[in-house]
Amino acid sequence: MERFENIPSIIPSMDVDLADMVRIIDNVKNLKKEVGGLKIGSLLIWKYGLEKVVSEIKSVCDLPIIFDAQKAGTDIPSIVEEQVRLVADVDIDAFIASPLGSGSKTLESFIKTSFECDVTPIIVLEMTHPMANAFLKEDVGEKILIQSLEMGVENFVAPANNPERIRIYRNLASEKDKTIKIFSPGVGPQGGGPDTAVEAGTDFVITGRSVYQAKNPAEEIIRMYALIKKAYGARKDTI
Image (cartoon, rainbow, N blue to C red; front, side, top):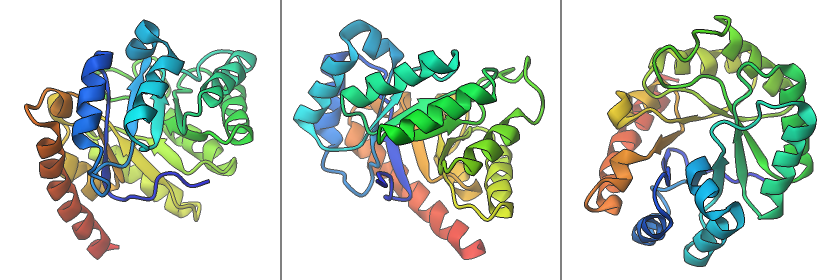
């Protein structure tokens, strides 16, 4: 089942308190064109529980829910399989895994179990913060992308604040005759521009503080969407 077809669009990251999450979602829920889904993370889940958070979201809107455990998918294969099943049990649409440093068997288990449970796997290729790859081999993102493509994954995370890396990943997929969708955090406070990321190949801009710290989150999303829509048009013209 394909859950992410609204390209380009924005994925607000709900790194806030539960009450603020509900308020923000209620504010943006009617932006069907601009908002491609909602991302929830580990801090919210640790405080309130996965089932409670998902229930609150579904009581307000029907947008796709992405769970980013920051960072799941890094344990031994059997644990990762159970992580996916727990996510599927509460009807989450997609699960972000960060297999950086965990090995090919863990990645394989995450992808296989996600497909079995009808959860869309989204694979992190590279992080957004400085020195993120200090303990990793230079081509680790490319290797993760290739293995994931071979297993049928179409959705990946690449850093908005490093557009050249986005281009590299998209071009590598094209060389393999694969079509991918790129989700990019790292805009705003982390230095990335939503428009420059989309020009480079991003399909979904993940943004947290830029939206949830705005006086009117819906207005900020509309402003940002205008930028990425123009950038996407420019990108399509060059293909």
